[in-house]
Amino acid sequence: DGPSRFYRFPVLLAEIRALKADIICLVELDCFSEFRDALGAEGFDAAFRARPGKADGCGIFWRRSLFSPAGPHRSIVFRVPANDRIALAQPLRHTESGQSLLVVSTHLHYDQQAGHRATEA
Picture 1 (cartoon, rainbow, N blue to C red):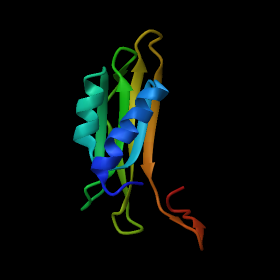
Picture 2: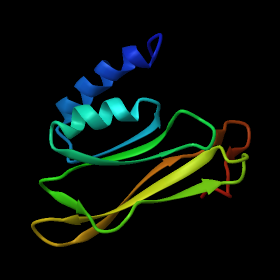
Picture 3: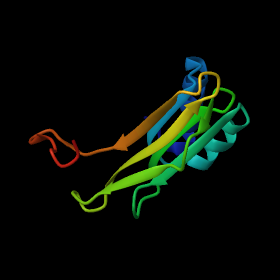
Picture 4: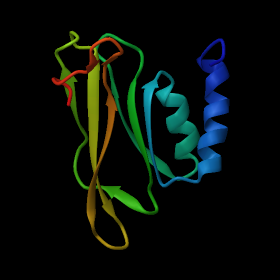
């Protein structure tokens, strides 16, 4: 991890480009507009939901030549810990086959002492 998001952005963007993925989920995303612009120029659409009161959140990106939105994105804000964790869901339709899929990106809490929280599972 570098000194700031301005260090991480080009490093992450290079990694994402190297993967040649058709669907990308990013969490703790604090530079959504930069990713949306860069990936949008490369044929991606996106959905984003910030964590309440925070600058970061979850983002889902999909290659528009292969997928189209099958409905609006939806999000869940978990109450424990107080409005700090979210899940973002985007229904997509595969253009060629017409098959639908639901892509979910989550920003959940993990406590090393207590383990996974049942309220988020």
